[in-house]
Length: 306
Image (cartoon, rainbow, N blue to C red; front, top):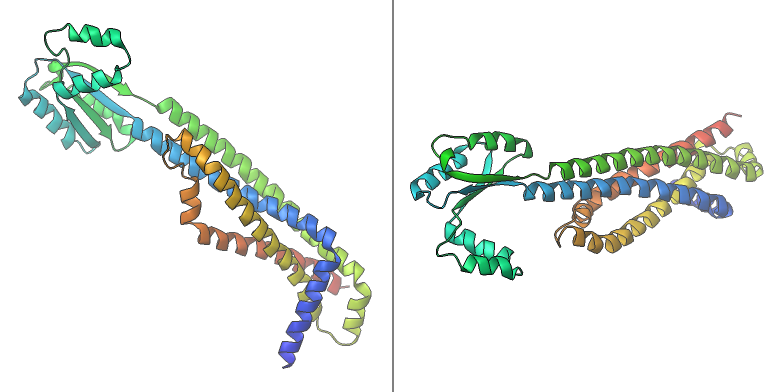
């Protein structure tokens, strides 16, 4: 019964501390919210940049065009050889007829090209291979492998759809944003600790007479300190709730717009936060409560030593 009574009194004093210094608490909540938002911005940028890199890497391939008179045996030899390489993810062999269909589809809005094509007696296109590597770094090796004498003389041309420049640009932007975000996280974390520390000191100053009486009548250091720590934790919980709501709203507004940049595909933003929602919430809650409790403990401890 005594434990229950003490717990109720501690919670009552903590809530009293929280409401009595509402304006200072508001400033603390604001800084804590900004700290949490900066963390989620870094996570969101990382998720989107990874999705962008994957999309660009999926678009990279090697197109190998064979001469129209290339025999099916040579075509199958080339396909089998490229498939056998461990660096190869996929090889697609397009027949001359399919190449012609694809060519007409790509130029369906260009009547001059279609008219010129119609004047020809036979299909001017040969078969082709579309080769995708497992890693973007494997493409130079695959291009070199196409010099195989068994079929290299039958190759009319080859193109390497290289998005390396775009990939490097996305990586550079993502890295810069991550560095900037980490700096923001560090700044807001320091500000949060300082503000929480000072808000507890102000709370102690405004209640110094009450706390002095509590100590005179035999209240333990823990009984005096816990309400101050709990009031800081209240601020952390409110900050976490506000930040979670803002992050949810921002994702809901941004994700549809980002999808247009990804040709309607997954931008990585919504899927990342949906898949890791509870884990992220738990880690951020533990981190912010620990920092606030630590700052509050230090501030209260300094008063109790006097």
